[in-house]
Length: 62
Image (cartoon, rainbow, N blue to C red; front, side, top):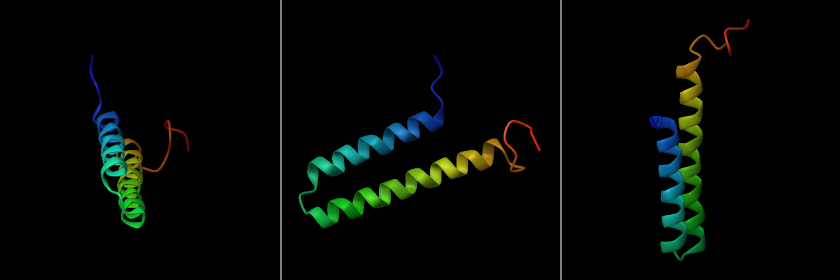
């Protein structure tokens, strides 16, 4: 079974978020950490879409 890198990256972000949630006790710091992780996850999704469809079109349609 081949696991693609995108799924592995998203799983890593989830693991990091769970670890941050369970180990950081300060609420503001916890939320800031989760916000940074969420930004990285969004950046990963956007970059994947850019790599998969470099011309801006989805599924070869105009």
